[in-house]
Image (cartoon, rainbow, N blue to C red; front, side, top):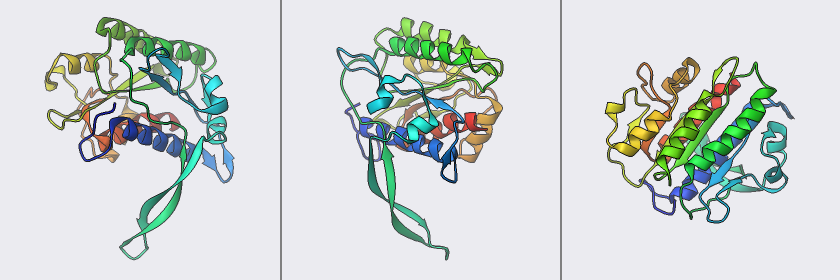
Length: 255
């Protein structure tokens, strides 16, 4: 995660920015006036740090809550930074404004890749959540990684266990974002394993869910062109592709 991404930026930094951005967008989507509606719940798991391989990545008081409501998330921001953003000037041009940007997740780039342990941890959260949310849209798990798991068989078994959990509305959805310093062989939303170049990408295809119709619709809006039975994965993603798949995965449960 310490390597650079195509177009600039370090993997860990761009990943943290993308996650913070999508948390902010979910919060805005759940806000009506000054009221935050609990339209969904959120967990953020980090994995890889030596000696503390799997942990809750949310800050402060949220760090003791494996699953948080949107009200809890919005009311417990770690920091707010000012960023420049371009908006329409109403006359066909753009103007630059200052925008407050909330921070929950800090970048980190060290350790190995205990992906199987991360999926098992997610399974426990999903099992707890689905017991009291049988009528809800199924949980959506978005895994962001830049390398192969320590144990690919354990990771595959844990991911399949996770994908077999469900609510009455369907099975848990697992999406995978592989971020890379290379722009070669980028594959977005593949529908066949033959579209992918190597053993590791085949593994990610196997543990990625087919997109339901609500996600397919969102994918078209964001400029993807998914074929029938497209899987929720991007291989060799840059920062832009990562953000777009995060958008697909996080907007569906707010339908």
